[in-house]
Length: 101
Image 1 (cartoon, helix red, strand yellow):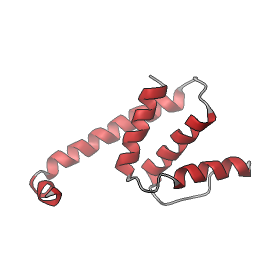
Image 2 (image 1 turned 180 degrees about the horizontal axis):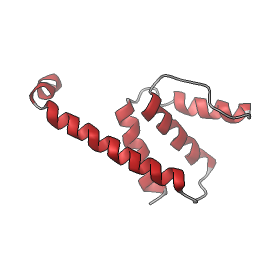
Image 3 (image 1 turned 90 degrees about the vertical axis):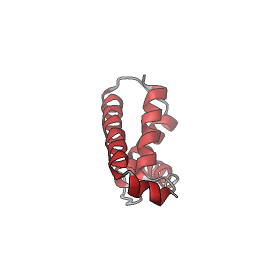
């Protein structure tokens, strides 16, 4: 059923994908320029959803010198492995709307 819809309306699907990308970029700009102090658990969510949205399950070691912090970051990202990049973008946008707007 879904496959049939995709074949019938590919241009609509492409537009929806572009809209999500645009909203994600806008959300990223907001989150990366905010001066608001967020709790560490929320910051980990931002990190994990951003990584899943931009890298998918192509894991890489987080930058930073603190091993424990890097372990928390990587673990948060691993927990989102069930999400597609598109789903992670939607969740990232939701986080921005919840915490920064």
